[in-house]
Length: 274
Image (cartoon, rainbow, N blue to C red; front, side, top):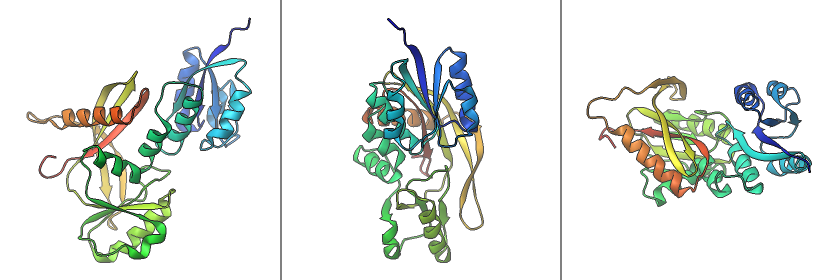
């Protein structure tokens, strides 16, 4: 009888995956890496390279099935917060590895679906409306300021504009339309206040917070937003925002039925401390 090697599947093999791949190797796992770029730098750390799009779960599974006689799949690594989240969930679902339902992955990735999901589960979100790109001509008459954003982008913080004057509105709609990859844009009420990111993990259905950060975002002269970095949040004496953020994240993870996953949840605290 042949003992299969414990193997990990890594979705993508770019620069940002190199440290993941190296660590997986150092822990004694065989590593299969997937990337559509045949020269992806992470492939040097992989035992097997699969040259497929990280968006195409079906094609990846076809390739993995050809390796299943040699490897025992024990986990899937994914660093993206975009469509590869759905790919990872689909692969985990297929091989019965603990992760999250495919439907939950879809909800998390598409901000338009996440807005609705949160509101249906009594998790506060800013007032908003969702438009498809072909509805662009109907987008008018909003009380300013508003935030115009893409519902799904490839790059974090792209496609977002704070609109404070009428003349910036059309450019913001155009920018969000060019950045979205699911053909949806969101217009939501602007809430002044600081941005926070809570980094944590869900392990066996239990939520473990790791660190609470202040996001350093910049609003440019044209209202476009870019992320400049993070700093560790220094709590004040009566600061309960971190506890609130943990409670909301825990609730969200439970409702999304996430079993195993890193989780980054983001918050804005309004002027009333909500």
